[in-house]
Length: 240
Length: 240
Image (cartoon, rainbow over all chains, first blue to last red; front, side, top):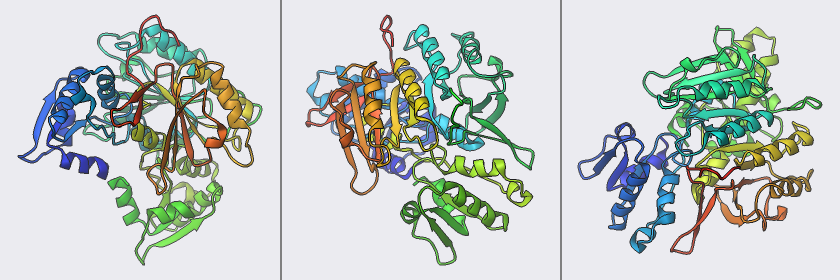
């Protein structure tokens, strides 16, 4: 955890967040009040945090990864944006960045995000699936390295296969794919495969999927391991 | 600086990197040897670091931001990928992630990267400009929030204007734009403007430019400041 995040937690009177992440951020002092909540109640949790802060206390809202990337910072600002209560509207909000899952996964395997990349969520809880399909196709045509968040869930078991099919229609089967599960946590696993070989069954909600660009390379190391990186240069005459 | 990066620097016998970044990472102990180098000699610097490591020492290669994002990790792996000397090929490489400029800028202003986004470099030192134009157009059509690195230089003063024109052909003039210069360093500056109003003269090489998606919103705060965020949800029937 970054020192700035550690300092903020230390200064907080209240710690608000998804139960699992609050536990990972602790332990906390006896004078700090912890408010763990279920997953998927981001707006309720944000409003609760703003109410505690409006009462005059200092509140830390805990996220995993970077709170500014598919996480709690946007949820808190969404609530503020629709809020009319002047006490809540007056709350000062500071965002402290962190390492998002794509960076954690990338760093463990080399530098797949070494050149132009995008990060997108496959969850259609909050956006229509046709938008996601269109965005995937354009991202593939743009030859971005693509990091996929929320790649699969029980409620939508078939969409990741569709996503891989879209990417396969633009990229070659030997395109490197990295699967990072629970990176930087207990039970971390990393898999290097290819777009031709990857199967949705290898992926769950806790996996970050990084699909290489046309330039991303596998780098077999002398110790038998494999690293993955995307070079910084792009040769002339070799279009996306 | 993240504790893991601080630990790695502490364990290093040699510190290699661009002069400015090495200075920012210090001070170092008397038993540590510092090898500052000029900017734009990434491959020479990487080879030097690998040679020092092949001799049996521990070497830290310093980057700003996240070394895995448009920085030194890819340069080191590029050298390893073409290297035939078995001593250099046997060097163990570990990448420690950090906060990249887009995250630092985003966190200071709210959560503009709260939904699907891309990060791309406008530098045509290492890739042809026509690839960059095509990628920009596709990124805009995909409705990504777009973070631009290396947005302008003395050698290419006119390309940023072209880039803004491409984005204006797809996005509306009121699209929020954030300019973060030297964020988290001395003399940090942050500007919130719009795609209709932004001028290339407001931007230099040390600026990270974040152009919002169709969904990115300005959030005026009661204290007179402005925050910027991209909501996590995407309404049905409102295409990219």
